[in-house]
Image (cartoon, helix red, strand yellow):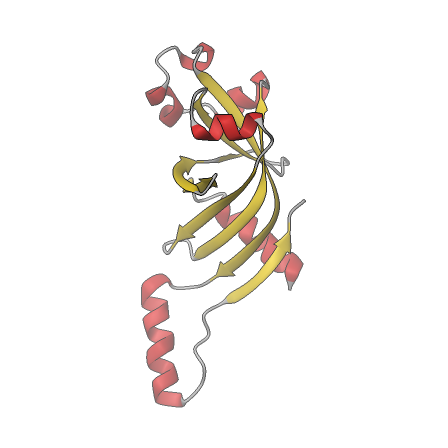
Length: 157
């Protein structure tokens, strides 16, 4: 089940672009990028942000993902580090990042951050809110426990 859950986690995470990154007890809304064949999540931030400062220290961080529409809920543990990989920046650069950095990819305030996930506690569901309500109603009519999908911890490192 762990390999299936790991695959499902990655497949669904690719379709989600946002989460809450916990740095030093503070949750920051962030947009992550994924690159095929690369196990890391990538973030673009400004150099003076709490995230960039934590990455400079090689800090551990958690990334929370919650998407009812994609049926994915996850608490991802990993490590932040700074990166100056211009090729990675080229791969993930897009409309969102260009809205924040007037100087484009060469903006002196831009900082690329690599997030190396090590493990994740994952919940994968089907049907969103309607599927949840259906399962609850079904359980009341049949005395069966609701089937709310898969749950488990997967190793990512």
